Length: 205
Image (cartoon, rainbow, N blue to C red; front, side):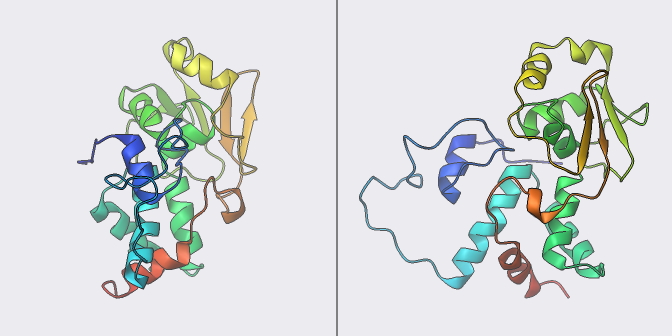
């Protein structure tokens, strides 16, 4: 899957907020959008512009392509659940996201690297597909080599975010289990998912 590998802080400045899955860095020193100086007049966004901004938050935080996100929205529309909540559940249930929320990696890109390098096991079996959908009851562990990596050791000691209630973490063996489906209340940043649904509603039937 091709991805935009541009500067992460620049992406966060573009959407006007810090995205914990994308980077640990802060935009406090330069909160303005790229190309806009401090104090410069900001144009009022249209309804479409506001919806686009919310959609970009999800794309940047999870590092997914437009095509992939559109596919998840279609799946959310087909479900019997609230479309916006289902979309967030599908994104949070991605293997790279669950590895991140479990505290094995400081960001989703770092978690994706662990997955791609065959360091992640689901129910004892190696899974190297970042978009793999983790199911309720699945247990995540890392390889012995991965547990010795400085990045993993440091993150286990000080996770980027508090682990959500839908994950159970066994500190004795450093394993994580998804005990329920990810819920809206444990989402890591402010997002108006209804606006994302509205953005795609025009073109997805």
